Length: 247
Image (cartoon, helix red, strand yellow):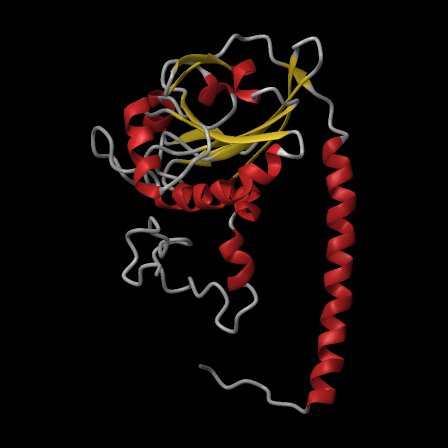
């Protein structure tokens, strides 16, 4: 541990109150931003997306499961930089997100929200990973439709060959994010007439708030401690692949 200032309890409280003022400012700013986000105009979804689920074909409208709000996490099929053919075993970072989804989806069902995942993976691979990891949320295959491309998380082979692809409302170089399949989060609303609207999508670090582990790491003395790693999140593993396993 590096040398750190050591002060009296009274001095510590004074410094803590200074940080608290800033924390409250950020909280209020986030509250205002959330209101602005919800005021974004919507786009009607006219395409009839058909997904593959464990019980057969399902429509986008089916994924709401009787609720009016739907949040879909775009789960990458492979880790960044994995160019091997076929299935690996799912992106470790997306799998960590999935751990958090699994802890939240039941609570959200009781707030008129269905939280789930979609991936360009065969159903049998999805179900195998769900069983292995103990996940219970719904997860469908978008392998046979344009869903990933239409909602900004799939680069074409031509874009990969050219070294850049559209992502996060801009363009990203393939060397910065070496994966055709990328991560993101998309939100939809269905009205009483059954019409579906796309209300929001976020990508990159916009999905970071889904990772509760970073909330804790940002509080502890060493922080995220990722400076010496090949890339941020390089430490993340599937929860059954860590050297120190859960007990």
